[in-house]
Image (spheres, rainbow, N blue to C red):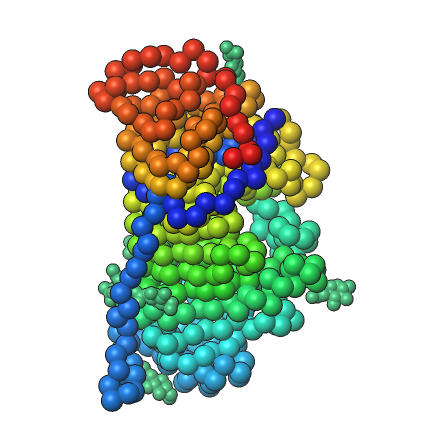
Length: 466
Ligand SMILES: *[C@@H]1O[C@H](CO)[C@@H](O)[C@H](O)[C@H]1NC(C)=O
Ligand SMILES: *[C@@H]1O[C@H](CO)[C@@H](O)[C@H](O)[C@H]1NC(C)=O
Ligand SMILES: *[C@@H]1O[C@H](CO)[C@@H](O)[C@H](O)[C@H]1NC(C)=O
Ligand SMILES: *[C@@H]1O[C@H](CO)[C@@H](O)[C@H](O)[C@H]1NC(C)=O
Ligand SMILES: *[C@@H]1O[C@H](CO)[C@@H](O)[C@H](O)[C@H]1NC(C)=O
Ligand SMILES: *[C@@H]1O[C@H](CO)[C@@H](O)[C@H](O)[C@H]1NC(C)=O
Ligand SMILES: *[C@@H]1O[C@H](CO)[C@@H](O)[C@H](O)[C@H]1NC(C)=O
Ligand SMILES: *[C@@H]1O[C@H](CO)[C@@H](O)[C@H](O)[C@H]1NC(C)=O
Ligand SMILES: *[C@@H]1O[C@H](CO)[C@@H](O)[C@H](O)[C@H]1NC(C)=O
Ligand SMILES: *[C@@H]1O[C@H](CO)[C@@H](O)[C@H](O)[C@H]1NC(C)=O
């Protein structure tokens, strides 16, 4: 049995994982234990230049919007008013309907001009480009009566926070092909504050909706925009293929914005997430594949996922997580050039027999469904101001196999015992690794020749008081 973690808070750390290749193979009989891998690393304050829009005699001149499809519409053509008060749902729906008729002719583009465009949830269509001008902001309406209910995701069986249906997402799409959401850094703003408050006060009867959720779709590109203050997970591609997310800023308060994950690739394959800045109230990225017996029977893994050149922050959870819902399996994930700053954890893999947090959709989960956790490699891990650089908590039922550390140096805040924590871990360290690795791991020299074989992979040194 594996426990969970009250990890402490870590200020001013930096994580720089150049290559991290975990491959988790889960078959129908192989799911779940609580395994936590924490790597906490160093810190560079990240800054970016603001070069967007320019001022001309005190007046902001809007960049012209490029024409990326044969036909482009202006949202105002459909009667929208960008005053932050008028509800523009019908304008968005009419625009999408017009574009849905252009599929055979290369599709259509919807330009959202500068302004504050309040709307209830609406659906996108195939062969569509949604283009947000600079200073264009799509605002999610806060009254939940405007949010339609949808059936639970098949791989979850439940809403997630409540049984039964769930609220849909503000911007939604199902069974789409060739969708682009882009712009000159315009914003989709979920105005989640009222949702977070109602959630905490237990006033909601259904699971909150994500900001953008695209399901059963392929050839999706999301670039050059900002997503902020989602009611729930921010960007949720579900059972999608060929998804690119590039140069996107995702923001939510780092505290008291519950479950505002940045990006949740869920049963997705062939996905790239790059050049993004994410600072949110839960995991910056959480790779998932369904929940307990529902995820196992849906049986769609997340795989072939490349994550690179990100700057992320998560005070509540982690920069990059795998799980906790990962019953459909996760494999072939590469994380390169990840900078995690002022965060609770850098990388976190969370699972359990059934799942973690002792939280399950219902009592019918398979207690014998153990995960296989193997082939995890950490290379070029550097950090500072870190309390527990590594905690790999395997168990006798779920040993963690073939873990490799290479080129690691992490500056510590406390130099006591229980620094490099391991239990039921098989693997090796190559070359010099600081701090000194646990006895569970084999030691190899720089040329990967075995220097000392571990006699005791099952040794347990886990201390959550750190
Ligand atoms: C886009 O807008 C966000 C939010 O205003 C800002 O933080 C970010 O720096 C902007 N990105 C670029 C590339 O200008
Ligand atoms: C869209 O319509 C608004 C209002 O009519 C106008 O100010 C704006 O210039 C139009 N934008 C484009 C790109 O046509
Ligand atoms: C979006 O499309 C899905 C699938 O057709 C449907 O269930 C849902 O009600 C639609 N949502 C809205 C807001 O129209
Ligand atoms: C990122 O997007 C911003 C606008 O949002 C744009 O100004 C910038 O050039 C983009 N950067 C890259 C590398 O595409
Ligand atoms: C939740 O259900 C209760 C009891 O049916 C109802 O009074 C309340 O208005 C509902 N709340 C929401 C936000 O739908
Ligand atoms: C993936 O999607 C992009 C954008 O729509 C498209 O250009 C590309 O051809 C797709 N790749 C594959 C392998 O289908
Ligand atoms: C994002 O912005 C960059 C820089 O302006 C541009 O080169 C790129 O084509 C944009 N991406 C999309 C999909 O429009
Ligand atoms: C693993 O994922 C990468 C993308 O990150 C892809 O190029 C590669 O083909 C995948 N490997 C396998 C065996 O599918
Ligand atoms: C161990 O894992 C690495 C990836 O981290 C993989 O390349 C290698 O083949 C695995 N070794 C064995 C013996 O499975
Ligand atoms: C270590 O644990 C594994 C199960 O995870 C077990 O098969 C093995 O016998 C144990 N080895 C020792 C030396 O106790």
